Image 1: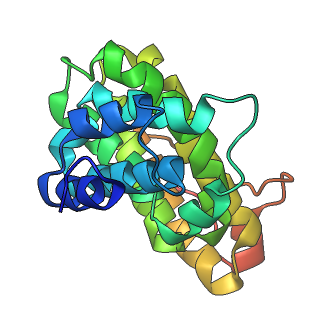
Image 2: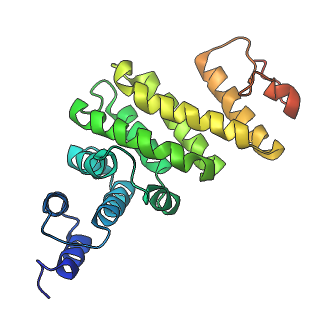
Image 3: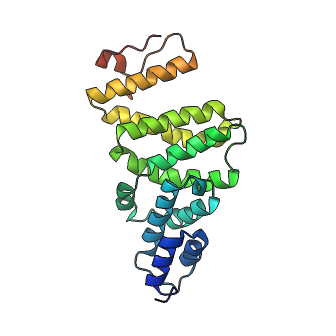
Length: 216
């Protein structure tokens, strides 16, 4: 099979995970692949999901940015892709990598396109993301911020994580709210606060609603 054919290219990319081949394919208008943007975006997100080293490689983020944000509006196929591909764990891993790097932090070349891409796709994913996954992301956010030397560089990622926590509150059942309250209580204790309550999105006292008061 000719690797220059669409079939040959797809087979080669799947086996090699060659980011340069993917970038070239996206830039090559003469290479026709049905739903090329959707296929390459799916491929890149799955690599990021499975390969921590790829998250620190700005080439994946620049490719995704070009595909997803290159036009005046988001691609119509994007929600379908996001519902099938877990993207919140990618945000979680990005925050954990940042926490692991401590003062060194993440590359600014990578953070720019990374935050722009995640800002476009994470809000689509959040309403259909499991509560446990959202809480893992929020914990990773807390760890990343507590150890970061340049906290301003993480503002975009932190906002996405906290928005995920708010979304979880909005959609939570009473059973889920107990988990959220326990998570919030641990965070309050870690911050050293002497007195706190967990407030819902409209300011209602979530502790009172669930019988779980946040006094420490």
